[in-house]
Amino acid sequence: MVLTIKKGELVIFNIFSNIPLNLAGGEIAALSAACLWAIASVVYGILGKSIPPLQLNLIKGVIAISFLLITIVMTGDFSPSLAPVPLLLILLSGAVGIGLGDTIFFAALNQLGPRKVLLIETLSPPMSAIAASIFLDEFLTLGAWCGILLTILGIAWVVTERVSHSSDNSKTQTWKGISLGILAAAANSSGAILSRAAFSQINISPLWAGLLRLTAGFFIILVWVLISPQNSHVFVNILQLSKRVLCYCILAAFLGTYLTIWLQQTAIKLTNVGIAATLIQTSPIFIIPIAILMGEKVSLRAILGVIVAIVGISLLF
Image 1 (cartoon, rainbow, N blue to C red):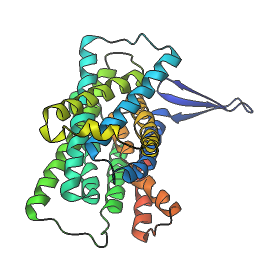
Image 2 (image 1 turned 90 degrees about the vertical axis):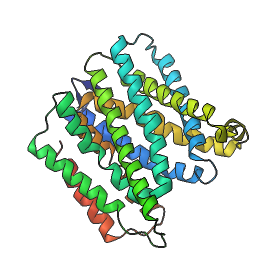
Image 3 (image 1 turned 180 degrees about the vertical axis):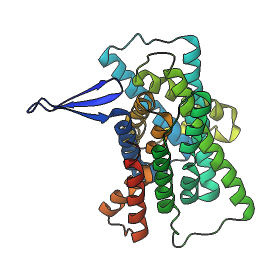
Image 4 (image 1 turned 135 degrees about the horizontal axis):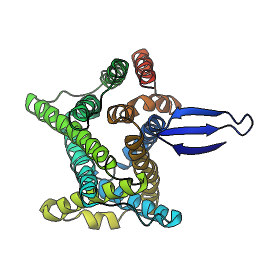
């Protein structure tokens, strides 16, 4: 079986029947990115117990950029089409979506916790779709809008399930966390729109787009570390990490950053930005079977939420 990308579709040629089966390549790339991010999140969760978020961001950025550079050397893709304006758009998308977006997201996690922040993050797809319809002249059908709505509802139903032994935040923390969560969703959406705008002007490979976005995001985080006095110990702590922890970092960065960013850029390039953003947000759905495999109890509500989201996803194809 041979896989090729052609005119926005993933064409699967069956070597036995020679009958091509046309599947939406952008949607498949987005779902694959969501699945890999769910797997990597388990590893990042383990690493987060010993490595602060800012350090983890720097480490995964260096590792993922290294993987992308190695891939570029191996593929010989040394001549990307980089006009000034599209290049600026891609760099801005990385700075906003990866650098600022991830930073604000982690800040929101500290205020609200993952359950509520993930719920707020589901605002990103409709933000992307609305922005794309305004700035990129992209329009979604009624069925696609219904699919987006169902997918968001399914994800929200899963992540908003009450967690036992969880403590309530003060009103100040709650409103601050909500504000940060909305800003993180807006940053994620803005990054997707900027990437799409760049793709509409030049023909650049998702590999190079991912590298440029990661590099821009990495430098934003790096500047933040350098100008912040309380983060002066970050580099020393990174050098003191054990080999085992570094191996886990490499695994998480390979799955959750290197492959995921590449697939995300492929999805944004090959399909409507609103649909891509929605499917990329389905990581909480993929966590459910992972949790079952790890021996965790999954409620009926979580399973029903998965079904609702899958129905919504099916309406997007």
